[in-house]
Length: 173
Image 1 (cartoon, rainbow, N blue to C red):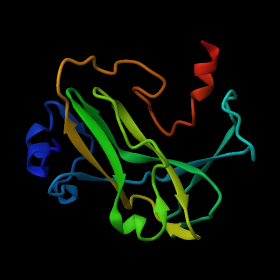
Image 2: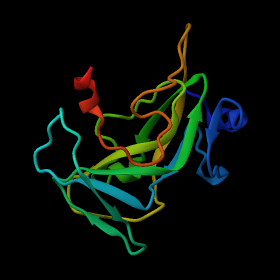
Image 3: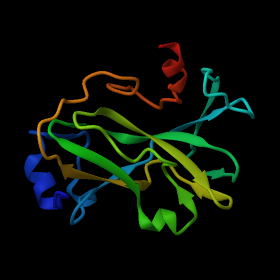
């Protein structure tokens, strides 16, 4: 089951935490999250799963930044979220998708117990000017059935900002 907006609001401060919560961003069954002012891009043209790649940081100015097709931009949400016994999920807003902008290539699924900022994997179909603090996506919450173990530690838990791929760590095992 997906929680309603009213249920999200009711659970705030209990099993759902959303920093800088504003009721105006609450929807009937989700909460709109905003794009932070920073993006990162990989410097390498060819990415290797077994390597930790160098990234370059850029700031989105108030007048906007034009994103180009063929480049993967990593961003993050302004909001820091945490859940205790729910599965958080992130999707792009339909208004953003209708401009040909994907905000996550494959990683819209969070683990029960996730705590941190959401890293956004942004790509565009055609050049698109974006702006800081735009409501770019929406987080929604699924209930979970059965016994579970909370996500306590991992490559992306308790992050403090944009995280590039940590897949190379899987090859170190």
